[in-house]
Length: 204
Image 1 (cartoon, one colour):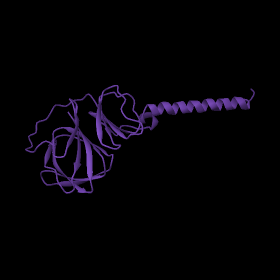
Image 2: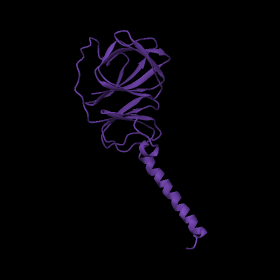
Image 3: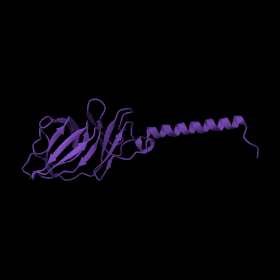
Image 4: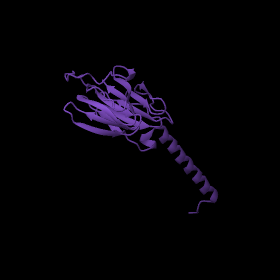
């Protein structure tokens, strides 16, 4: 069998290069699951959370998209919409169809929200989203979390959490950290260093 000519070899190389480029383009369009080999930052029975700088595939569930670029914002999207914006760091919280029954607040303390300096970004039948900043050395009131909550930190935030029995722990959170905290908790929060802020999504 004769060897390929130089022209034939060059043509094959061009075709392979074109195929590789198309593969990368398709992967990028599909979001982190293909382009970056990424997995959800959090994945449990209620939510799947993606931290992305590219558009994701059409959402399998309704979602909240929290922007971490520039002014903190949150938008609500529906199943089939494409979450995420190219070049904008966005935390996408997909809301699985696993509602839970409300729980009564029998703690004797107020609910976590609303509270002073908390700005409501959006509310519907699925979520309430708050933007909040802590003041240094100013503890929040002791409060009860009646809802599961997803916290997206906007900056490095060192928070001291104290329960009614006086036990405390300092949690170090980096800018962009994402936490899922379950409901039925009582505590107060104290910023012990620098500044601190977050966007908090309560799940109904």
